[in-house]
Image (cartoon, rainbow, N blue to C red; front, side):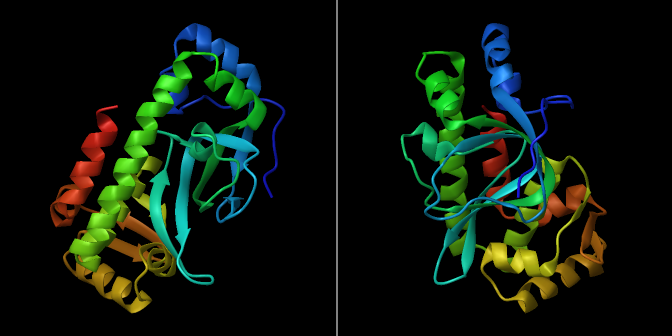
Length: 236
């Protein structure tokens, strides 16, 4: 369960909020409440009513699409560059996907009524969210192409790099089981891909933690999808 704090008490690193003009930022700030993002916490599940949006301050939120029963496939990831709850921005009232915390951190949460009011007043937030919406759509499209076209190792490398970018660290917690569930492949395939990278001394891993030893070689091992998605995000 998400436990809220009375007011933001850590520096705000969310890129969308940082990009707001001062007048908009000051108007929005009192409408935000800081909440911790605890690993594996589900912010929305399929069919849930959307009551809040979450501007990620640190950590990663994974967007999962249901395939059959409990099986899921990762559609996209959101870090401090964005916000969870975009369906509210385009007028939806319920979630079509599952949003779950993959890496812990914190977010600035805004109530639905305040968010829709802010988006409807013609301020700068709407323009920023339109651009972010396209960026997320682009990430989903490119990820779908990646799933179809590239090897498990190439896709896994892309996912490791995207995580590293968002946590701003070459060391982070990520198990083979988590990668297997996110990527929709057998755990054995993940283990083989990770072992291949470990033997090349590009990464190392132990007890559910991954450390990138050679960032340049890891980027070279990724499919083109990583640089395509990365360049699109940087162009915003």
